[in-house]
Length: 259
Length: 285
Figure 1 (cartoon, rainbow over the protein chains, first blue to last red):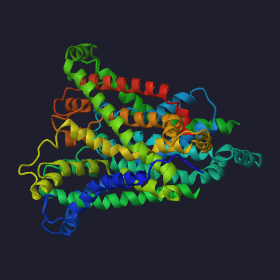
Figure 2 (cartoon, helix red, strand yellow):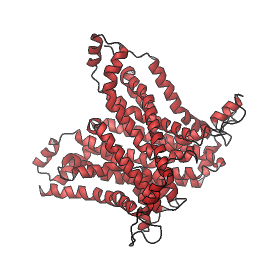
Figure 3 (cartoon, helix red, strand yellow):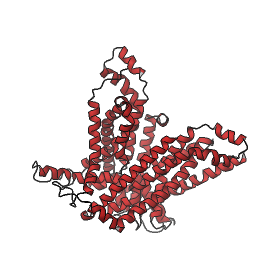
Figure 4 (cartoon, rainbow over the protein chains, first blue to last red):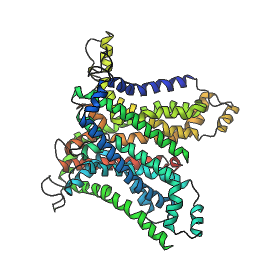
């Protein structure tokens, strides 16, 4: 068996690029244990002080908590709505189907800045003050396409005859959904929720427009960029959050593979 | 089957109402706002529509130039990141063997880490007392910090390429994996050199993935505003930044809405073009 022989320089290229991709991340990590407030050579020594200060910094932890709340809530709503649309796509035939699919996937395409200003106009028209709620609502819209695509892939992969069998045995359709379909797609829903969670947790472009007085972590991080002496604390938290996000992503992948 | 039909409405109405209220209605309000003369008065109260904003927008060349520049920057970012990611995808599909899965995860980890942070990391690298400058000064290669590294369009393009590469490799990898290996043997049996085999067999068959990758970067990058905000400065701003400015600093929402409408229409036109070139159904498979 011979595939085209491109020189094994290819693996060198791969590892070189990987090194470049990890370099900025490594720099963030070094920054978080660097004794100085600017990251410049020669380095002045290492410290865990930023991590200790982080635990005492209420505003930073509050912003992180806000992000957790928004991400948990918006991803729950997005997963519920996405699953509903997925069920409609996979199990029903109706005239407006193409329209519904387009509507549900379009948030992936519309530029975030456009969606952000549109939501800003909506909330100001309704005299709704900007808050974590308005950020959360924005995040449900942008996370919905992801949840939909994940769940629909799972629904396409299992046999509709299972549902037929349940209904032949006397179950009505809502019962069949609850007892047969939901348990089967549950891993995909967990995976969808985790994906939506990471989308929301990381989201800045919408949140910058929709945040009120309570910032999410990315918004707070952005507002603190001007203050050089606060930066290492933010980076320290960012490193911890990065580790948290990666853990979530790996769990999501695991759950998806279990199927 | 009445319960099945009832279930239909239970499943249908919540997402429809939610997306209607928080996706369709806001965009319609934005469109309406772009026909307002000024910010005075309530949004929902009656006002006389005017083409004033669009007239001003069409008269001023600067907005169009910036839209053109943004599209050009997006084009460069999409071309370079696709070109850089292709060998990676090729390596994963044909050379990595059993470890391909691990190598793929290794590639994607940076993409799963915070976007804002990765962009910030570049700011720390390129800044006047950042990593690159202080390192070069430390080694004695330069004596004054290089200020040309940060706060311009090159910094934005560089950072965006960095952000996109892992993501771009995915559709190309998927397209390469679908190629029937027997085709290579056939080409080899017929005497094609490896070089010819790549350009006549592998590359043409991977084109759907290449186009998909290109558009997956190009379309969102045209509307980008966060990366230019962080590493672009005033000299590196993109079209998305003026939309942002009119809604924050300048507080001219009607003009901002008109600019935003132009961007929405441009994006939808690009998507329509992309859908004609790439058969989306083949990608979802």
